[in-house]
Image 1: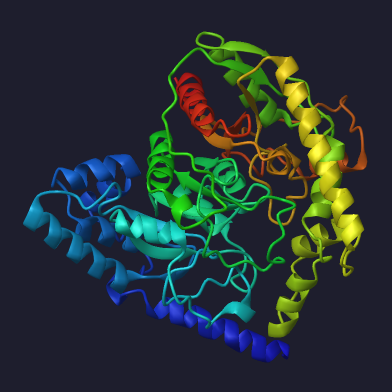
Image 2: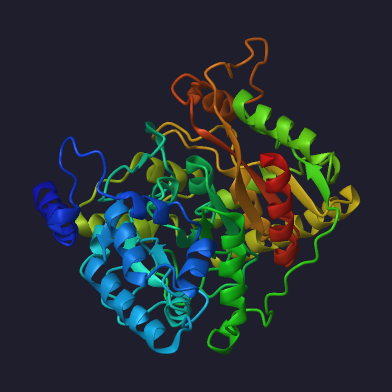
Length: 502
């Protein structure tokens, strides 16, 4: 496909999206806001608070849906008509019964571009997958729909859509369209996928919350996947973004409480059992041993650790072979050498984005599929690494680890080239969540000129850091727990976030 034909197809997709926005909701130059005072109050509420207001009848589903449809930007598709029709049905049902239909009655939910909704595309950022609407809802979407959720938009992802900027600073990445939506209060709850930080990195970039559970807890049937089917070398884990910590648990409790394993035998038969609050043993990981965090992140972690000492048992946690972890991750990502991704781009004539080319080349076997023996050996090495980390964790005597989400605040566009603070936990399949500290990057968070990089990767990341350009970027931290201890990890995250933000 020629470049001109590709651009025409991109223009057609974006024109279709724009046509779905009612004229009265389109911004006009000089307009201070499309939202009135009541609508601004609505979008300030968390998903849990919205649920409570809707269940009490103080808000209607139509009013909430309208507010969010008008507030939304950075998206591939707006389901305004479908969303408002669903809201009217919910309001009519509530008027008839005086009861909410489920745990998400009337709560708007945004979806990443790889989550299937019947009748709509789930292109995962690939133009070649456009105009191939899903025949049915993803499993998670069906559960949420039954619980009264209203799907009102699909968030953007890189690829034909182009760059999505950070609501706090257009020079910085938002990590994803979902990150931007939550960060600008254009969605109360977002659903996506995390295979290396896909929900955690956007949350950190835009100052919101996210949670990636252990694989096998959340349903993933119905996701649009470009990678080889049946490959589980790196767990592809569904996750959630929210603007308040309780909303993460609201989502997890709904999903695990709907017995999803009856439809998906790959899932654990494990209902959600809220953890008992206790004094958590929190390990502090300050540096992964490959790329040390820059001054802004270091400052946030130090402040957090000091505040935690009032309520938690705080102790150091030493890094465990991070370079080896990345060596495994970069190869496990691409068993086919990136062939399917490159073929999908070639089919539509799209350019290969620089970061896409970079991560495929990181595999060391770009364009070459690994053989069976090579794959077996790689998975065996992964399993050995997991066992050794488990022993290291036990020896440290911690319940959870508090650490950076990445070595810098929200990176400048095109510079996010070190994912190991997040992808490490995908490799070992440990649950991990992100929370905002309430702190931001300051232009005074300058690099110590007498501190020299230990390797070329650290030098590249440090060189990309610019505290003046990144000033105002939110500073978030990550809480990691042991495999299978999702309830404890999320309880610890809520307790730690409350202590740090106090």
